[in-house]
Amino acid sequence: EAQVTQNPRYLITVTGKKLTVTCSQNMNHEYMSWYRQDPGLGLRQIYYSMNVEATDKGDVPEGYKVSRKEKRNFPLILESPSPNQTSLYFCASSSLTSSGEQFFGPGTRLTVL
Amino acid sequence: QKEVEQNSGPLSVPEGAIASLNCTYSDRVSQSFFWYRQYSGKSPELIMSIYSNGDKEDGRFTAQLNKASQYVSLLIRDSQPSDSATYLCAVSLYNNNDMRFGAGTRLTVKP
Image (tube, rainbow over all chains, first blue to last red; front, side, top):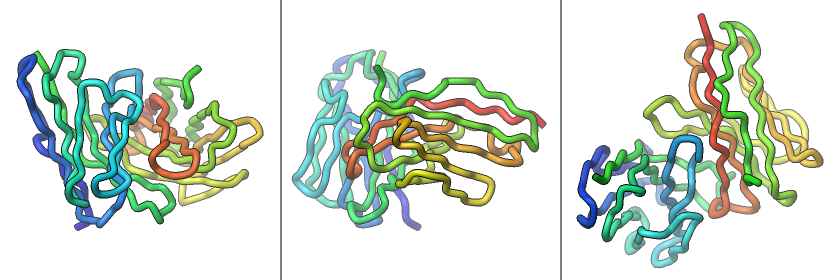
């Protein structure tokens, strides 16, 4: 089954404790992206990657890091989480030769205390 | 000015009615337009895409695009309670890396 997976789905942590949210897709997509979703603000892009070893900042990259060492994986790293990073996070992927449809993972709800 | 604007709602329609969802965008050179549906606590899923002016129909859904007015809409005919969700409008310039989402319109279809 074609899918995007994220782990963990739910996470409660404390300020300053490094964490990683994993994202993996099995569709051989070149493009992967991370979004955060907050009430009233919609989906805002954090980082994106056009292919392996090619990452770039989105609209709200501060406090986040990413890497793309393999085509299927695109982890999101919070080196020192803060309460303002409490949010719902989505990973998405798409083929650069497609019509633009992005496939979303199930989401990770993060709470930073 | 937000790049993609939608009425946040909630929009409430009775079962069987037509639901009309609207979206405006600020970048005149936008090329691709999408409507995603998001159920509460779930991830967005694509329901319609449109690239040229006019109407595009898919079952009970019709997307309408007017690039001159920088306006895109989604009509849902014969609305069902299962259509109750938040609808996200997304706009892209050329490819995926510049996709912008609106904040979404929450639709409730009452039986």
